[in-house]
Image (cartoon, rainbow, N blue to C red; front, side, top):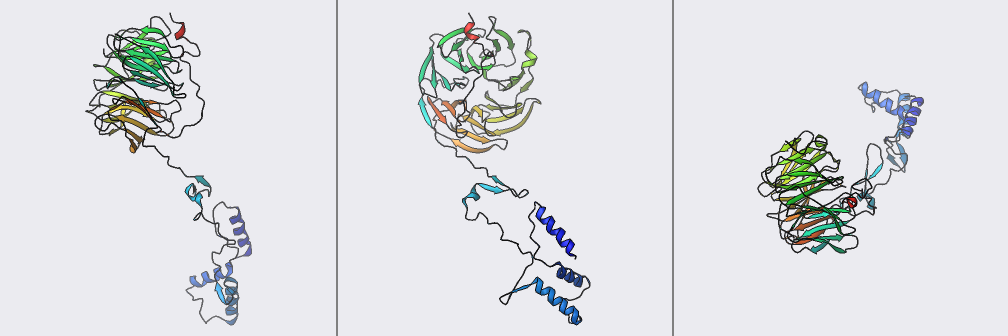
Length: 447
């Protein structure tokens, strides 16, 4: 083999990004000679060669196998320099892994610690042990609203201060609470079928919304539209900016509405009822329509075998909805709301009371009643159980997520509030809440 070919090989090896052993210390003449001998079925050690051939072979062997203090040391596949040191005794091997294709080092995913106990526990006397109500919500301004009997309290998670927002008498008890997206206005549903709107900063009532004929157990905001669900099987869309606030009546459920959630895009509404049904409503289809007549829902899901209160829209896939059924069902189901297909279902072995998606990982948290009264963290989409959080002694009826998305508050029939750092470590980010009416304090102008 010519020296020109050896030069080309060395040039190729120096420019290649793959790991190839350095062959500059090898003599390709002897390799060519030995290969030729094998092809001709000749033994390289045969004595039939001429003296000149024997001398040539001897010189090639000396170049290939060099003597070192009387010992012959092989140069085949020899390194030009020492190979790179490994991480056998280096702590970096725990944090890095090598990309074989590129030879680059990349961080290895570190599994986070999930605390098994609550970070904080607060007493919540007179918290109603009623599966069909929604008595807990966390605002964009980091204030937790909780309804205890006839009273609504505001707990500031930043300062740990507590304020009493309202107390009702014959109208009570309070049956639902829900913050507007700006974190300033709070909607409060009452047992007497009225919904009150409150300014949490001035601690004053702005107006009352009437339209239901029974208690209002579920509320959901979509910009300036407040959707309310009652025991009268009725869902109302209320535009809080106008005097005649009812803009749409949605009639499809046959029993009490116990769950309402607008999708993050505001394009679809999910409703769950005591009739074991889930309905998906299209906001565009109802826009500008009459408040009378039949209500055309987009999808009707009837796979659950018990009341559906737990509803949660996926933050990383806009058309994915999770729903949870009561004691006779115990399942969490996942729906593609574009096609109407059930994409997954898992039996949790316990009544599903509430659901919260993580905004940082592909995980979902569920709270349960009979019989374990626990919280479960699941990996999506495998639905492998990552953690089981215990501490409540009664069914965990409500979940609310902090504005940074790391902490979850749970409220149970044991009259306690517990705070769990279940979704990771908080980041120091400044929250910029959106105004419900595009920068205008519209609620304060209503008379």
